[in-house]
Length: 254
Length: 167
Image (tube, rainbow over all chains, first blue to last red; front, side):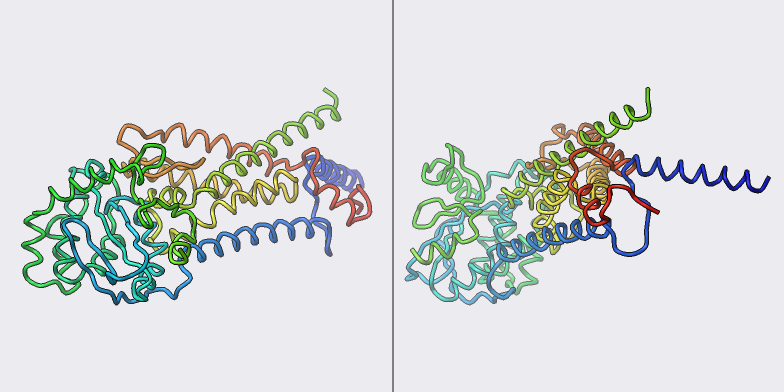
């Protein structure tokens, strides 16, 4: 009777093994096997993919050490804020909207490279604050509010840090964006004087910002397939492709 | 139906699942890899990761998807890759679900695209159902990884010196 049990059990085991094998699942065996080889290949391919992704990300981000301190003059003409020395040989125009997530990515990816080139006097950058995403905040109007505050920051002598801060903290599309008070507090924290809050509250440059937005949008040199969007970067007045991670090096090289 | 025939049919279904899932990963990975800015914005729109991790995750994700697609296409480690696929799909489903529950208005960016969309333009139900469909392919391959034209069968055969698993 014990023998019958044993053979029954063995038959069941064999049937189970056969089912696993039919499903393509190899039963575990001791020692290195084809399975180890297969899993090794999987591990190598997956790890290689992760390394490729990390390397590309780091290359895109910046070749400079992170956190370069800005050390360049800032001037303002109407709604246009010019960073860098007036005599710099290459002029870069950046059209950006403070609510635009692609603009935040541009800032994140290239901030250090741009700062280094500005510090070295290789380029000057005209920042054009654009308000095409005013309708994308709830309530509408954050793009213009932030652009006004950035102009106040230029007048208060804190533009580089304030510009970086607005992107580091950038609100999501669909949200309310920062209030006048929040925009003021950010500037005060960066060392803006007492007049900054009044300037932000006054929102005195909304008209200039709207005009600059319409002018930029109507400029064929800044369009792709007849459309203008943010961010748009132009070198010497001609739009460049910022998906090319070497766009700034190429601009400096001429 | 005779056992042999039904085994072949199941192998055929598994092969379709493997190649289908491979196509999903290759297409979605490629569309993400060619537009890194778009991928970054798509990942950011879920509003889950801290800003410092966005670049790395958005940079690695396309290549991870391409690796899964390539391994499935060739048929190496089908079961392990199916486990990884299922895990990634569960992450995607969780991401879309949390966006929906929190009332965000985003496109999933599953096959390129992504980012904020106007309220009323969201397609969370379709996106989740589609991912559940892909998950079903992965689950099939976890339960029954045996497929036709898989390179791993040759590798296993070559390294054990026999097609049979002797004991």
